[in-house]
Length: 493
Image 1: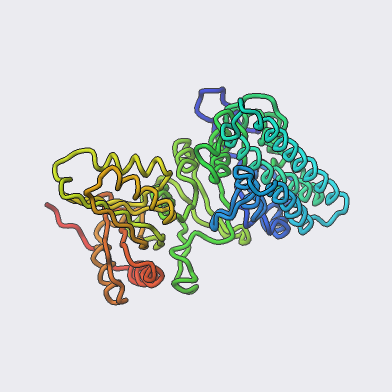
Image 2: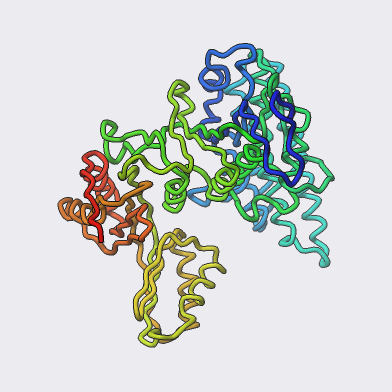
């Protein structure tokens, strides 16, 4: 990538910091308001050279990836899921037609020029028909006994994922070009590319001829590579692409544009007038938020930025004059709770009287959870009981329960739907957050089922009933953020 800064680093070297450009990501929900972003984000009163020095990584338009794969929340099958279980007379073909219609509706809502609309329609038609032919040919091939469809499904998932980002990046480039911006479509999806690339090689090849001083690269959030992004990151792939681009190009700053500010709590739960924009926090807090299902950024993407010494900024895409929240490795100026959030979990408790002094129980439980791809939020144990608080469907946990019951027939295994409310901050030392949390929940008449706090002292987790989660978050926010306690001095030993 061309720049006015020092020469680009050679492979294997640490990235050279040009200090003149940013790498910025736009999520799917914000992309659905692309027309508004033209004035607030892409141009925002800029002109000439001020428009450039920015690389944009875009997600698919809102809802498109759900139609291509499966619905992220409800699990409703998309093209991929229907193709994987094709027992309903090619239902995936109808689903692929629905994707094409949704794509055309998405770009039809943001493009005004008939020629641009026609070009976008042609783009969708070419990609959708290409995917359709590929899947039909694969089905035909796998009708022979020597070939197994299951061995190709990971590649199919990658292929389908790239369609959404390629479409949105192409449409964004058309919109910006029509507005007089020298935008450049960078397709990292590997469409009809016969080469084998690592992620780093794919990114370097895609950006090698770009001059960020005079061009605005619009890059697909999905990048096809040898190892496959979705095998490890699944739907978090766009943030991984974004962070790798920022690290490899030595960006001055990595920016994620959302449709809201990173705030001290959900304003719908605690009230608009009570929430505070974080303003500044660190990667440790970002990791805790990810653990609670409130991703500021994918943990692996955060690690990449952290190791490359690239600060991350979270902004509201529709408030361009607000600097948002900066995330780096700097410690807090003073202790304090920064954010209160919560997550619905399933508690899996294994009680075995013979567990005392016997090794192997925890290993077996972890192996069952790994086998069923279950994410652990938190865990506790004592002499004869191990409890895991899990982010997974009850149906999946029941499968784990059956495995463990077969392994430990004399154990008592219980499964319960609960919630975890968490108070998080860079530094909670001297604030008695656990004590104050319990007092606040007692006053709010919320029964506490369990509490967790580690010596690192960056979060406190309180386990409550599902119906009490919203009340618990509001009570903790009122006690710890809206009315923070004075710091309590630590006595010397």
